[in-house]
Amino acid sequence: MVDFIPFSPPSIDQQEIDAVVETLQSGWITTGPQVPLFESEFAAFLNAKGAVAVNSWTSGAFLVLKALGIKAGDEIITSTFTFCSTVNIIEHVGATPVLVDVEADMLNLSVEAVEKAITRNTKAIIAVHYGGHPADLRALRALAEAHHLYLIEDAAHALPAKFDDVLIGASENPVIFSFYATKNLTTAEGGMITGAGEWMERLKSLRLHGITREFSNRYTPEGSWYYEVVEPGYKCNMTDIQAAMGRVQLRRLDEFQQRRAALVARYQAAFTSVDDLKIPIQHNNVSSAWHLYPLRVIGGKYLDKRDVLLETLRTKGIGTSVHFIPIHLHPYYQQRYHYKPMDYPIAYSAFQQIFSLPLHPKLTDVHQSRIIDAVLECMDKI
Ligand SMILES: *Cc1c(COP(=O)(O)O)cnc(C)c1O
Image (cartoon, rainbow, N blue to C red; front, side, top):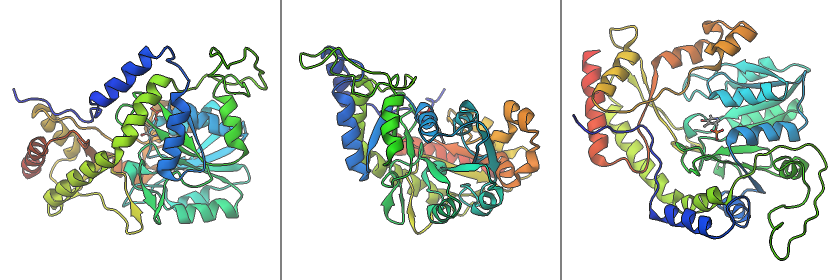
């Protein structure tokens, strides 16, 4: 049996291990000195106006909606072609998700579809930067401004990515990053919100019980026992163990991205002339974070050729994934909003064709050659 090539293992080396062990031995393991250091280093890396660390993208985005005052009766427009949490958080605050279709090439929000979906109740647009390729922020910003809507960016895939030469996260509007185990930078679980405004101040209190002052020096010689709760906040703070790991990962991010870019270039060269495959593209005015390498099977003789391909790759010891099962196909959303698969034809057909190949900094040239050969061999047969 050949060795298994996992889809997306984390890139952890001795530096992360040492940083975590040091924190464990420091006498302070939850939110303490490491978290503000990670926040300021992260903000400096992206030229962000400010950064607030949390325990996941999901809780961070939920807090953003709370801090912006989104409530029952409000509508939020987002893409059906995303991970469930982008939409779950809208339900969590009692608002109504209004799903729209994607554009056909990069599978990001269709700006025309967003425009058509705007009503008197629309409060925000959540733009997902699918696979790390930024959505059309210029058009979305203009639309948000014209209709007085918040533009929120799901940047779970977009670290680091650029639109019109500006890093995603450098703007004032809320941008949320994920440090989940498979993401370009990981703290096992974790997230960061960037942006500027009153809502950022409210976020800082909402993430930890609604307490106004920083809590982390409570048990130090300088600390005070006194604190005040100004609203019933939540428990979404990042631990120092995670932050210590994140600080090391941030220092390694440029090197990670160079490796991702080299792997992508090799995949592109290998698949560009295969008739039945559609390779991902990158628009001229963006720089993708290449979180995913999504391919689409567009020809072949079987109806379920994508599934046949993934099953064959699995038997050859190659891990793959599908990003994403569109939100409108999941039972909860399908039943609650009576969606039919073809309500969003572009997302639905992309879902049937798409799959993601392994793409991570630890992927070796030898393993990548095995993946490329296996895909090419399968394509000949299906
Ligand atoms: C991973 C992911 C999330 C959720 O991130 P967590 O940190 O696991 O909560 C949200 N949106 C997208 C597009 C993702 O890929």
